[in-house]
Image 1 (cartoon, rainbow, N blue to C red):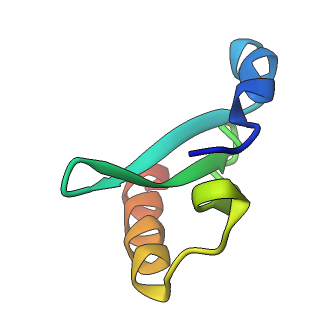
Image 2: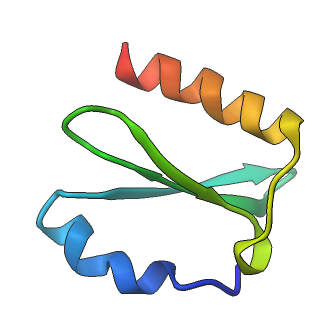
Length: 69
């Protein structure tokens, strides 16, 4: 996705961060950072740290609501 998500590996290891990928039609289209303990959405990045569409953000919000609840 041409961004710095690999630099979050230690945060994931110590469970301060969780990184997941949104895939549509088997293609990565967003990288999502979630705070594991609270379930709070920290950030969402598209390709090269670009913005994502409102439609993709709605998908992420629906997914997050299911994961947190």
